[in-house]
Image: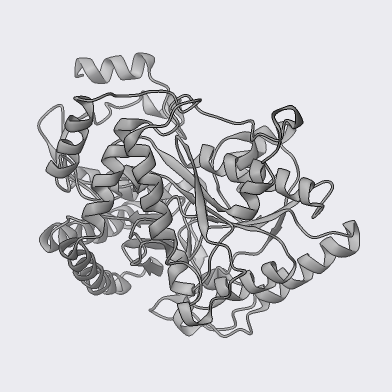
Length: 475
């Protein structure tokens, strides 16, 4: 065993990993990367098919990002945001506000009372950025009289991070039931999971279930009923609603049908309830637009960003909100209305400088064209997977794809979790030089934007061969 692998197994505790299984075989130890490729300590190369857990946008070893990082290092690496401002964080905040100004209805339909997302609170990762939004929403509800004891609403299968507050508004028992004694209660409404929706009367077909669903959007009725129940039981609306726009990630890459998000937002806003768009995964071009909310012409009260903000280089996140939220934290010093929350690395200069370079690449004509071509190529290649008996549904939004594996596509019968089909398929893919990670029995493909057509073809072909191998072995 390689000495680095031995050190890892002796001392490193990995996230979301059963460590008893981890030590049974030698782990892949990554030492370098270039473009869409990673290389391990033994010199074997792998395609990064999930963008290093959904963070990498422009490929590894990007020269523009490298240069931005080096240039900032020659100035200063980090200073505190408690009492001091800094150059790159200030510029980045302005740039994020500029990008967020595109959210909402078209200019001709906007009213003067609508709130522009003009305030940016920096933090470290998606979980901490969600915690910021949660705390701000909680205090906003209390201080404005919206709710004396704020309660929160989110989707079934929701995952918004691993801090205690973020876990509390999540609804994946597999992840969260262990900590139930630490959490506060939150309500949930069904996610629009068309493939497994009890209201969808359509027989399975060989295409995305959103395209052939037969329902009357009963899931929207359930949202309406839950809002009414909250009013009847507590006499006040929810303090906030949390949602991942267009696609829920850890829930199993559940893609929302067109119009669902805008319809829910209309109901939520009619109640006077602020809402939080968790764009940790979907932001920065991943869904085909800078932010997923753009595609439904909606603007949240809180926009939560992380993962791809620095192009996968450094941990950095941001929570954007508007003036009305900001104002409830304004007062005299002795009133203690300050937002009492912070992070040591808030607005870190290195992260801010790289994020600015990443946004410049993202907004370039070449990057936009490449993303569009890659998205179209991905759609064509994924269509070939419908030939596999064990592919039940393929859900693609932009450059995010979830391929749900089932025992029989005709019945939608799922594999049992203990069969580890998703894990085994991804293991077989790694043997073929392609790295990704499943969500249960949903295999995720989320390539970096610099991926070439031939590399994308290898990713999909590897998935196809691996599914065939695992199912054949199981039989």
